[in-house]
Every structure is written in C-alpha cells, then in structure tokens.
Length: 155
Image (cartoon, rainbow, N blue to C red):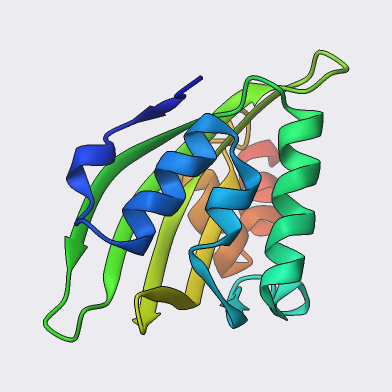
C-alpha cells in the first residue's frame, strides 16, 4: 500500500523517505529516518512535545493500528538555505470505530547527518463546524459575548 500523494514535492533525503514509509505503513523504515535523540517541538500544545525516536515509533504504531486506511498528502514543500525542510501536509482516514479523521498543518524539519533531528510540528484536526472568520475573530478578541448581546438587544 502506498497511501501518499505529493511525495515528489519533497527533496530527496530523510523527510521524503519517512513520508514514503508512512504512506506504506512501514513503521521500521519510517522510524529509521529519525535520530535517536530526535526532538519534536509542538508550539501550539507544548505539553505534547517529546524527545526520542522511541516515541515516534509508539505514536505511529498507534496511528497505523487505529486508522488502517491512514493516507498522507504533501501539499507543498520547500527547502531553506540552511537545509531545513518545510512541508504543508495533511492526513486522513477512518478509525476502526468508524469515526473519520482529517488533520492538516505544517512541519518544519531540521536534519543532521542524514536523519531527522528536530521537527516543529503544527498539525491540527480539520474542523468544519467552528463558525466563519468573523466568529473566530470575535472569539479570539473576546468580543463574542458583547456581539451576541448587541445582536439580541432591542432598540
């Protein structure tokens, strides 16, 4: 099984090999692309950050087992002058209990000695029912309650 689209957007090297292996659900080949002291930095959820390729194995083993049809899509990728690989990507599938899963985001890979040494990881569930941009801005700005009160007030 090769459940990866857009693989050709990635440069030859460990990121491309890792994504290809993930698309095949080849856990050993995938984890082989990570340094033993790999660091995963998750800025939007700092408590989810971790160190070590053993945790990469545990995470993806659970994903492959729980979402047997998990497929990855690389939407865009570029390599910075310092060799950092930036990738916009998503994944989708259906959990064994029938719940669909769709996540999207960006990963920024730092390489060392031909392996993935660090990733800044921005991957979030895709939401379809969280409201439009105006509702989101009101929520962030703390004006949602005030706007609702104004909309419901009678002159």
